[in-house]
Amino acid sequence: MDEFELDLDWVGFELHPETPRGGMAVTDLFPADRVAAMRGHLMEAAKRFGVEMGQPDHIPNSRRALALAEQARVAGNLQAARNAAMDAHWLHGKDIEDDAVLAEIAVAAGLDPARAVPATRAPAWEARVDAMRQEASAWGVTGIPTFFFLPDGWTLEGAGAWTGPSPLKVVGCQPLPLLRDAARRIGAPPR
Image (cartoon, rainbow, N blue to C red):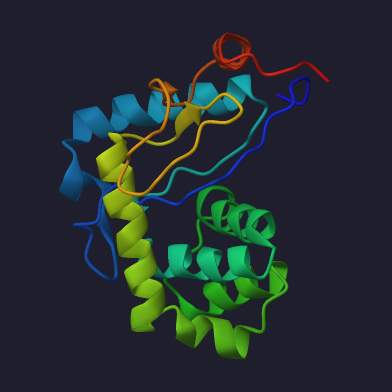
């Protein structure tokens, strides 16, 4: 979407907050036939985007990785943390709950792992992850990714209270033309 003047703000979201620490098997959440169908869809979508990825059988509890990402946001390195966490899980099949993996993500984001990894268990960072989930729920987020396209001048004022008309909402991994159309519809200027 480089062809439009858009500001992007990534906000993490626990899609399955009921996932216990230590995670669980994908088949504990979904029936095996549905897992096979979802994997087929996911792999086909990845292939269309030229992405090679693994097929994790384990759903991690993402709270600590999200807390680490928020630390990286404060330090101005959110994108690096996000990329490292996604690559660790989806490309390399690493456990993003493991301290060593979280340390790798912290280093990639320019954080001191000796401070950042223990902080992922701190009440303040956990509260921030909880607040993001509550806001996402107030906004009607039910899947990932969810994109909200807001024209210039529109703001978000806590708990999903938007000023101005309703934003355009796009849910799921959608084709690029659909996202371009949403950008045009909100009047995003071309570059």
